[in-house]
Image (cartoon, rainbow, N blue to C red; front, top):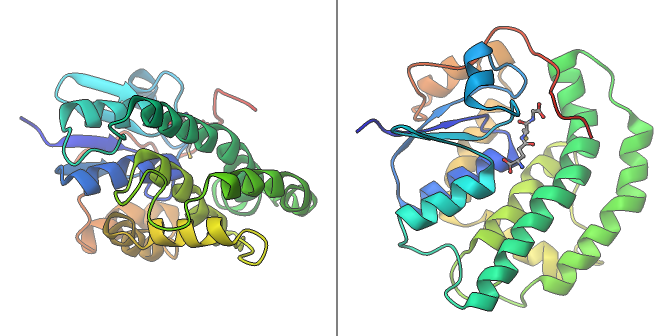
Length: 249
Ligand SMILES: N[C@@H](CCC(=O)N[C@@H](CS)C(=O)NCC(=O)O)C(=O)O
């Protein structure tokens, strides 16, 4: 059977979440790395919302990081990334949803989009005012909530990493690339929790690839990834020019 394929960018928090699950579970995979918006017509057929990540496992094609991570858990249950206790499983899914939706809005669509995606993909100047307003007004309630959830030690549901930890921490990589750091005096438990998750083997392995990629122009990224030994697919669903997304916020 063909190796499981993840279509998406190493720099996307949603792709990072899926890759962290694959890494933690020790599942072999390949990545069709391309910057979102560059998908070709075949990608439109694969991903009806033209979003990444997409997973292809044999004849099964799935969109949405949460759907993909749940599939990985069902198909490869060990090590478990969802808590065994039913109430905790539900809590973990809620934290995953909070991260994907609210942290996605704030950290990706407001911060990362303004300072990284608009200049790099669209050749536009980011809105610094929106960035500053978001950091001042929208980020603190997100971090206040995470502080109320952050464990004093270990991970959110004990000693083992779970989907909740992975989903939350994934966004702070992108936030750091646009120079946002958690203020550890104001949100000490969150800063320490995210630090522990990002120090886990799955995240550090991915970070080596991500950090190297940051310095590479978009058109050269696939070749650079292959050269550094990343598991890049032979085929790609990428075209040569970006297209505007079909979902607007
Ligand atoms: N809910 C989706 C969100 C995925 C998402 O927003 N991906 C972004 C990249 S970080 C994307 O594909 N953006 C392109 C677009 O919106 O057209 C998931 O969890 O997979």
